[in-house]
Amino acid sequence: MCQYPGRKSRNTLRSISTNRSDDEVPAAEAEDDQLAARTRTGAVWWAVAVILLLLIGLLVFVLQNMRHVALRFTWVHFSPPAGVALLLSAVAGALLVFLLGTARILQLRLAARRHRRRRH
View 1 (cartoon, one colour):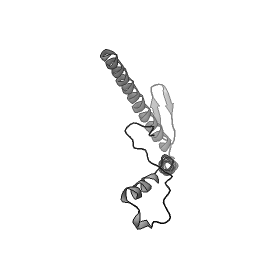
View 2 (cartoon, one colour):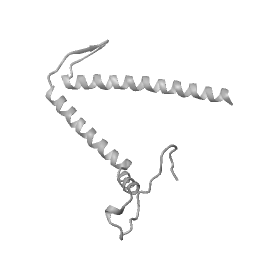
View 3 (cartoon, one colour):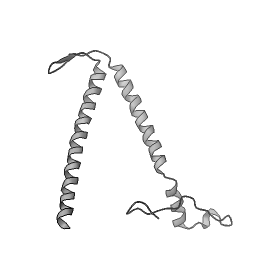
View 4 (spheres, helix red, strand yellow):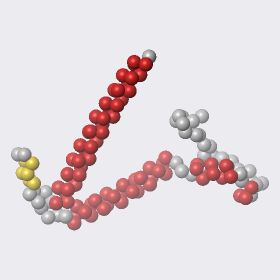
């Protein structure tokens, strides 16, 4: 039985009779075998590989931009390397987007909960 609504379950361990050649496998069965090869673990593996390549590129960027720059933010004055300063600003921007997105998701969940309560 499928554990996710709207998603078809598929049998990943399919036994194919040995007295059939590959040409005799029905098209639907061959398609299911190809789909079964894709798993969440495989997707995670590729995602980790892509993230690793991005991190290597980021490390190269930071190491190539080691010239110090002066930064002032309200009462804080410091001079990190340019690559580190850019990395910190990107992380701060991503954190801001994450917090705003979280606030919006919570707002939508609250509105959906209120809507469900009014219907019942």
